[in-house]
Image (tube, rainbow, N blue to C red; front, side, top):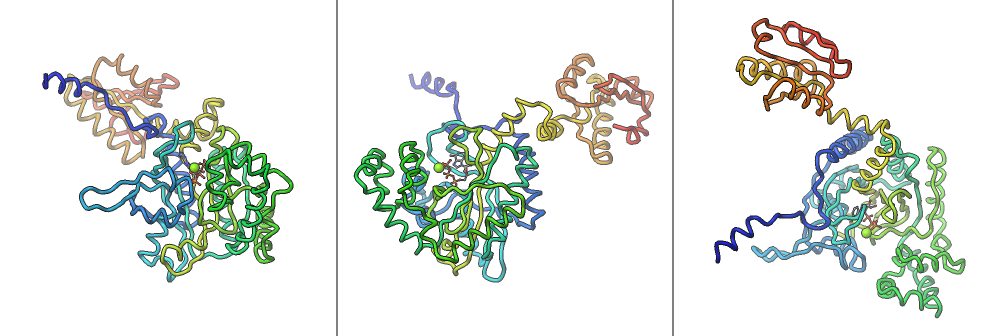
Length: 446
Ligand code: ATP
Ligand code: MG
């Protein structure tokens, strides 16, 4: 009996965790190209890489993100390490850990910092297109920069990236200002009064999250995804945060808008944009697409001057953004399906396909060794991507594999080629074949 149970469990197929996806090679090549473009762009603006743990102490996120947020209330993967009793959380976002590291290693006490990281984040959400339980963010965080220049640079990096990806017509910019904490307090009281008007309260009461936040975090109601609340927030009677800002905050927001105009970056002001996280102040911005349904925000960021001090560091201004890689990849792949000849698709195809497919005669050991030597020379001297076909088989079947690999050239090495110190090189697009002396291969125009 026990035996048959064992057999059964051995045979049962194991599946990935719901909402946590395998990225298979055909899609992973898109990721490689995207990551390379982003990294080069950030390095060209003198940003430095930082690599951070995936697991952090749970209190870090509670303090950084705020108790009354979707993430902390219901999305975190938290657990007790049974070996030592520590309470830990799989990071739901990157900023908190980055700030923790900056404080711990005194990175921003002597000099300003511009940092970036790429990695997985975890949130227990309902999986759907563009929303997963494990997803990847590219995060950019700056420390010590106080004026709108840094905000402009962060937005410019986004704009340049969409252009490099061919997505400039698919992604638009929305900005807003949250002002300073004391200005928001005033607004908050007025906002609560507005929501307390009986017919408004009826609507709020129907949404458990909104109702719960009415007195704890009413600003959060503004970015509710509930359409009825959205409509309520369009009401002309609703107080506008901008009207509660002091002169300084208003001027800073105007400077930002002037700067964007000078850079030629189109934007719209969205006064409901408050971001999901507690630690933002002053400028907030989102890059949004209409092409992914309700999962439209591909990149979100802003200023969070209070966070370093809140987490125990010396007061340091800070500003950054995070983009969701899955949503960008979905946009890129959808675009590729519609229009096979776009630039990004070509980059992916070039990365995927070998330049040269080398085939040899499995029955002739010398041809096998020669194949590997030639491949190595082409990689080292000509910087080519070379696939040696280890599978053997007839040359006819090897040609089929060469075509399937989309290689541009095939090199054929049989017994007679070994005997004569030559190889056959075939251009798989034109079908032209020529015989080349082995000593001359590196002079061939691939
Ligand atoms: P949303 O409103 O879509 O829930 P958010 O405000 O929770 O987003 P942030 O915490 O600002 O998102 O994260 C920055 C970016 O990370 C988002 O704009 C999005 O592109 C991406 N992102 C957030 N949550 C997910 C998820 N569950 N799956 C995939 N991408 C995500
Ligand atoms: Mg969310």
